[in-house]
Length: 522
Image (cartoon, rainbow, N blue to C red; front, side, top):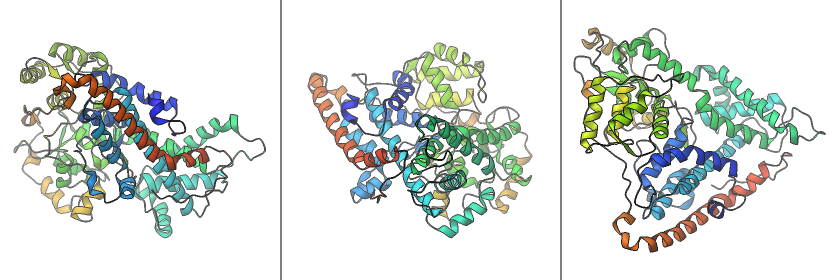
């Protein structure tokens, strides 16, 4: 069925689809489902978000805190295609699948569509990088010129450089180490990908061309790999930040006093200078204790939008959420949407240690808290509910973010925050830093009970029901009609999406690079 929907030449090969399906299958197995063993639109959004989270991607329209988007804000189809396509895909699919829900293959299709579109955006950014280096997309480049183009792509697409002004881009290149201190190691990462691409090209290389020549198609392939792999590769930077905060967390509560946080920036650190209001909006601030004062929640800060890079229209690349590994383990051991406290504790204590995540023995107090959660639900704990996520935060306080109540936080990247509140609004002023450094709370020793005041029994679970659950008499007839409608929608959707992509996909796959320059009207 999937092949019929996508058709040939859709730009997503079977290997890629198999990879998506392999990752989603255990998640899908453990998710709550309707009577037809399908998942609701809300659960679908969660599963797609989890898929992209593995590479540190936060896709617009599938953010952890995102609400349903109103695509009617777009005044015409071109506006939708340019700035809201992932939302458009999501809401369009949801409208048609809302009655009976999504199968695993339906979710695979959704991920493939969004992923392909994000990779197509790479094509546009690579074209811009060629222009910024005064190169035509038909040019053949030596290694130096090729690395210059990819360096421009990195700055424009991932590091929020100015994309359309030659002089500004030249300045961005000159001061790139000030804008991004990890540039040298990042450039090495890029060069490793170039060498890897060179190795892959060897069997199909034209023996009559120079070995160190690169074309537009080569840049597209390397650019796609950069966007896909950069999040995982750069996570070592996130780990360094995390290690610095964990050293200050003497009681392993997952919290650091805001005064200590700012104190590190006073010692010459270029991080740890976010304004308290921005930290609050990120959901990275614990203000539950008057005595302890404001405290930074380590996993919320690490995985927060302040540590994201990328100015791509469809996604940001952020630090990996280490709690995803916890959920992956639990979903493998407990392939169900609910579980008993005994099974959960056994699964948690069987977790293998990883580089960034340590297994733990569940204390008596935490066992009692899990019993509280089970009591709310009559004995079984929903694995994907807010209360269970809250419990995991206290079990793995430096790895699992604290789940705030709906509507209390609204994470955004720094540039969006500053667009609303002014330049440098994300950065704490010297006066604000001194205020916290000299506060009464700064003189109080850290507490082993830090964060305890944030525990509450406000639940939020994924709504897994669909309208088909309420009308079982007509279930068979609806299944048939829904399948036909779904196939029609997906066929039409992918026809629109890939009608323009196919010529470029075929063009870029040709190693000669002799392609007719195109005007992009998306």
